[in-house]
Every structure is written in structure tokens, then in C-alpha cells.
Length: 221
Image 1 (cartoon, rainbow, N blue to C red):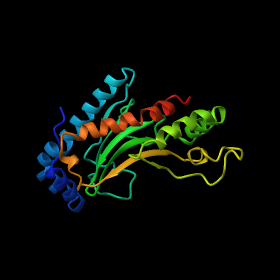
Image 2 (cartoon, rainbow, N blue to C red):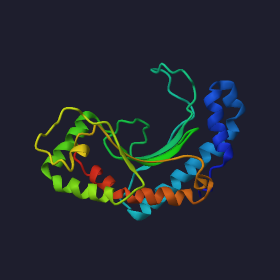
Image 3 (cartoon, rainbow, N blue to C red):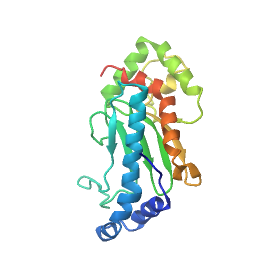
Image 4 (cartoon, rainbow, N blue to C red):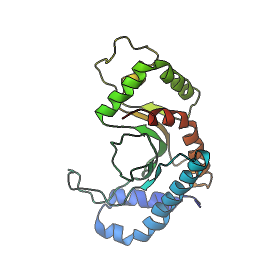
């Protein structure tokens, strides 16, 4: 059962930003485990159970980020992440590129956020556009659902080249995306982050996005 995050959560995240080396991490390993990792696991598990209770066919299980960074192919050789997150996804992998929509919750030294992203391969986004071409009214209905809420911001860079010159102007922004993100951004001045009500907030947000999740999840890959 999720309890809450606390000020030591922020203290660790800020600490690892300015002390990103093995000695500091080893000295603060228990701080990380008790105040960052374990609360994140508990929150992810609770949200997953609520989502599955809402829809028994929801099988996107929690994937929790590790403390260590993969520095093998990165110019940034800092060994530890300064952010912590969970994904709800079926394959158990941490990769951003994934053919299905992914729910997420993430904390950093400066902000926290949650939402849904859809970042498949370019061929996956091509399938997305083909689905819209076949039934643009379906996307219009999804956009109406999105426009009724004020929690999440639509994010994602657009291709400059127009793929379909006859596309309806009302849906062209969604159609031209390289990826789709629906993000709710927050800072730590909001006391709910330190409350057991955080799980309610995240679940209610995920539930708001569920019609969008279902639409994206139904696209043939």
C-alpha cells in the first residue's frame, strides 16, 4: 500500500545531482531505498491494481527505473540517474521506443509529472496515420475527449512535411506528430506530492486518458 513521498525523497534527488559518484550513493543507499525506490514501487503497484480493477484486460504491468544509468553508449558518464519513474507496459523493458501507449509517473530534483506517451518506431507512427486516414472521425472523437480536460498538455514534435494534403485542419496537429505525449507537470510546492492522496490524483488522471490509451492501443502494428 502506497503511503507517501517525503522531504528526504527530494533531498536524495538533489543530492545525487550534485554528488553523482559511487561514494556518495553508497553512503545514501538506504535513503534512496526507503524514500525513493520503495515508495515508487508501492505507488506503481497500487496504480496498476486500480487500473486492472477498472478494466480486467489492462495488462500493462509496472516497470521501475533503476538507480544506475546505462553509460555504455552515452557521452554523459554520470553513473546514477537523478530522476526516478515507473512505466506501465507489457514487455517489462525500459526503452522509450515501444509499439504501445505507455502510462508513466516521474520525479526529478525540480519537478514531477505523470501522463501517457506514445512513441513507437516511425513505422508505428505510419500505422497511426493510416488508421486516421481510414477513419478520421474516430480521432475527432478522441480530440473532443482531450479538449474536455485541463490536466494534461499535448506534447510532441511535428513533421514539417505534410503527409496528407487533404487532412482535416481540426486534426492536422495530432496527425503530424512524431510521437504523442500527454503530460501533467507539477512542482514540489504542491503538498499533494507528500500526501497519500497522490495515488488518487495519478489514477484519476490515468482514467481520464483511458479512451486515448484504448484508441492508441488498438492501432495495428
